[in-house]
Image (cartoon, rainbow over all chains, first blue to last red):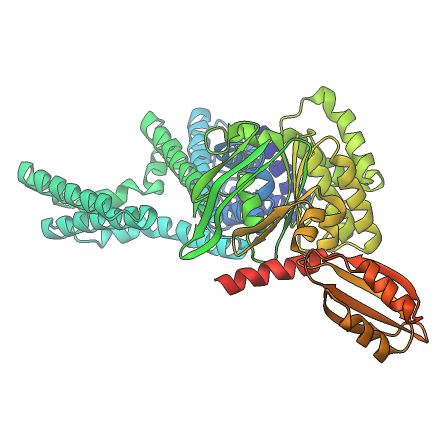
Length: 287
Length: 315
């Protein structure tokens, strides 16, 4: 894992990728810092952190598009997969390399609050909390990018799909507001979810009995929940999708609230996508 | 050393490798021969654990690829058809990286790396980016990568493809040299290469093994009748007539005239009949001296065509 990590980290700075990422990130961060702190003489640094999140949409694809796709294009995955390394080790090495570049960039931006502290008092712990949230959010986005990169051997496709996925997460909160909250649509949505899971199982295992069994059990659970607590399906769509909203949890950090649950949430989120990446690579070897 | 047990690989409906069985003994150099798309690379990818077999398994040194993949992978050095090189690294950096992922300890690393670079002659390009190397050098770096950690088993997929004749000869003699210490499986569709280097040949076509033997035996086994090539000083028609009338001669045909006043003919005898003496006396009695006579074995090319076409007729 360490070998892959070191190689990837070097590769970022042997090509323009690392510099483009850092340069663009620091540029945007600097502009916002200048406008919202320096020119207005405001010590409110946390607002910079909360307004530059959009930069992830552009820089995360740059950071992750190459990670897995280039390996399969250059056939270097043959080297990695026939070496005594585990697939998990390879994926983690790559993930931590991307996260390390991101962390390095964040550390440079730490200069800004230090500059501010010369001219007044700043809310140190609030900013530290903000940074933790910002870092976790970015790390979660990177795991999505890594996963998408493992699906294709074309960097450009990986970048575009990653951008679209992040954009979707971005507008998710806004989309949620327009979704129906009544009971019927909640039940329909739950049924669609069950069918979707069963179909996914069928397409990966080609086992009709297991997928039918999963569908039957799923419908059983829905019926059971309905009879036990019929109010459960009121607003079910909204609640489900909100669970996927990365940005909603980020708001807590920006308000200076540092609680354990969003931290655990972000780490779990990344872990799930890393796990999926490992599965994709493993599966390709079996098909 | 290597046991391939009933390995099958299916891609949907297409069967790439169909119930292949073979073993490779320690210290053997095995040639894997077949036309493009025969399943050579697929089989090699399965042995190295890059892809998994649909059925069957592979054992290396007693370790099963499915149960203990790491133990198997530690013992194999693999050079795929396209060397898996990182274009943005220098040769030295790349080999360092490969040693790291193969978990070679630092003490032996440096010494063995020097040895390998000497062996494949890439010491003079160690500081250069792999991107800028010529095809021949890239191929050698690919080979160096497989040699790192001196694994007991080497698997080389078309190691001489894209090299110039001088480099091909170099790589071949290098493989022979390596065969003293390693068990090697080598694939190729170039037949002289396999007969020059390998102790045993497996011919594979459409995912099935169609023949397996030493290059010499294969050629003997398949030469269904003794064939002789001779050059005779004399007029073409009379010589041919004389030879054809001889007892035990199945067929004789003119191959052309290479020297003025002589004729080259190819004589095919009935199975198990030695016609060399009668041939000599008959021609000398007619005062047509034989300038040379030698028996013709099937070349690997001919064997190859024969087995693969036989296979086609059966199916």
